[in-house]
Structure formats: C-alpha cells, structure tokens
Image (cartoon, rainbow, N blue to C red):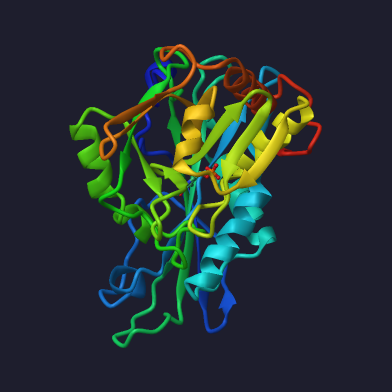
Length: 338
Ligand SMILES: *Cc1c(COP(=O)(O)O)cnc(C)c1O
C-alpha cells in the first residue's frame, strides 16, 4: 500500500480505491454500485456531451481528534443537486439515495481520509449527467449519478493569506435569468477564459459584476463574495449567484457571534466602505481579499492593512473549521458523524 504525504497534498485528483454509481433507467434509480473502475462507458450521443446535461456537487469529510469522521452539511448538497437536476431536466437522486451514496463511498475509502492535524480532508465530488442518447435537443431518458472522493490538502499552505482580485467586465459567468443559481458544469466552462486572463494579469481570482447593468457585485471566481463593515456581514443576493453552503453557514455563525447579516444587492461603489472582504466556498472556506482592482476606473479598493486577513474573517474561518473538525460544538447539527 502506497503511503501518502498528507502534509503536502494539493487540490488535485489522487486515485482512491472506490467510487459509487447508480443509473436512472425506465423511470427509476437502479442499484447503487461500488466499483474500482475510474472510467465510465458513455454513449457518444449522451446529452451531457452535447447539450450540457451536467451538474455536480462538492463537499468534504474530516477526521476529528476523536478519530470520528464528519461530513459537513451533506443534506444541503443533496438538495442543491436536486435543484440543479430539476432546472437541467434531469432525474436527481433523493436526499436518502444521495446520503447512502456519500456514506458508502466515504466508508469504502476510509484509508484516504487524512489524519487529524494535517489540515487535509477528503473531498467528495458527486456528479449527475444525462447518459442516454438524443440527437434532437431534449433531455435524456437515462441518467448517471456517481461520486468519487479524493484527499485534498489545506488550501493555505503558507497560512491564511489574502488574495488580490481583478474585476472582469469583459465576460459574464452567468446570465441574469440563466443557470448561475445551479451548479451546472457549463457555468465553469464559461468562466475558464476569464480565469486564465485574470491569472495572466497576476490575479488569483476575478470578480464578476451583474450581467445586466454591471453595477452590482456578483461572484468572485467560483466562490461567493462577502464584505464586512463594522459588525455587519454583507453578501450579494441574485438569481445568477450560486447559493453557497459555506456562505449560508458563515451567515449563521456571524449572526451567532452577534453580527448583523444583510443579503441584498451590493453596488460596486459600496466596496470602498468595507473593512474586510472575502470569497467563500467549500475548497477554502474563506479566501480573504486584500484588494480589488477595477481596470476600467483604474481604481483599487483595499481592505484592512492590505496584507493580512481581517479580524471577523479570521474568527469566522476558525469557527467554521473547528465545527467541521469536531473541535467546537455542532450546535446547528451540520455534521453527519460516522
Ligand atoms: C460551488 C460553488 C460555490 C461555493 O459553494 P459551496 O456550497 O460553499 O461550496 C460558489 N460559487 C459557485 C459558482 C460554485 O459553483
């Protein structure tokens, strides 16, 4: 058995022992199968390949100091996959089937769940695709639901350091009444060029504005955005923004800590009033933002001292991580403990 250098894991694909899969055929879900095959046989006319019937999820399992395994907010991810499937006209697994599949694949790959204290975790990637053939533009009549897992390292190898962000006015990630509110693979395809251009200019992430008026903050790369002013946590609300489970959790923790929470349109000009800013999602929990550059106005918004993460962001980050690891009481019942 190969040994894994837990302390030096990145965010990439490392093969594990098993994945699980299940087909929807003739109007119902079949048997949930455990397999070691990393490939899926697929019909060349499958709708996922031609017409974007493709949605996914991302969640994590953690090993605690007590040796127990905790899966964070599994049901929320199940419900979001159902909503993605519904919009893309795909049959989606029930919360019960999703739960059974996650538990099965995590338990089967137990040896890949990183030890406590390494900062690493087991990333869980559910996928739902139209696997049946169609030539006309219509939904498939066969769907494949699968989940693979892969151990991933801590997002911050060098510590909780803030990133620089650039506003992208030349591309939209999602249309106002389009697919931004669901976790569709196509949204990611639409963001790749924008992300590459941002990187080339020296920015790890890009900030999108609302596609219609270019007046309000949308998402930050493939993460939600939030700002903090005084003791208020402010995050944009829009149909084109993916409802992030991390963001919803941070809003709850902020309220628990006595902060005010606002979910509403955030005009770009309001950036100059924020003390802290961040991007949030499963991968990093929070990526603190030290500055946002607007190339059109040739203006830079900076947050805090421009170098380190703000006090509230740091507190929220540690609180959420500690709940995931079982270091703090899970008062909202977010973890499924195995
Ligand atoms: C997955 C995703 C997020 C983060 O959602 P979490 O549930 O917190 O992981 C944010 N924005 C987009 C576009 C996403 O696809």
